[in-house]
Length: 97
Image 1 (tube, rainbow, N blue to C red):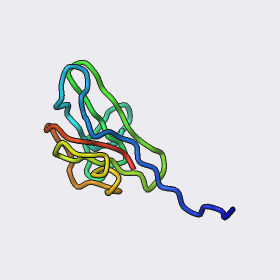
Image 2: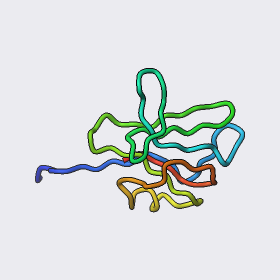
Image 3: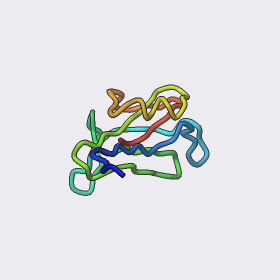
């Protein structure tokens, strides 16, 4: 059995339903102190509805949030390692690489 030299992991969903909405706000960002601050090409993804907040992140230095602005398939997420979309209010997919 050969050793594995590189493993890549994605976490996310192709259905962004959260709480009572199918259009939660999705934002890339970072924590500065106790505050979440929207930042492009960021390592943290915040997904929020009126009632709930979810944070997806990794402490790996190459980790990035991924936002797909259309209802997509899981293939749309794992085809990317980062996303230029800073925020989205549309019915779309999201993940973290």
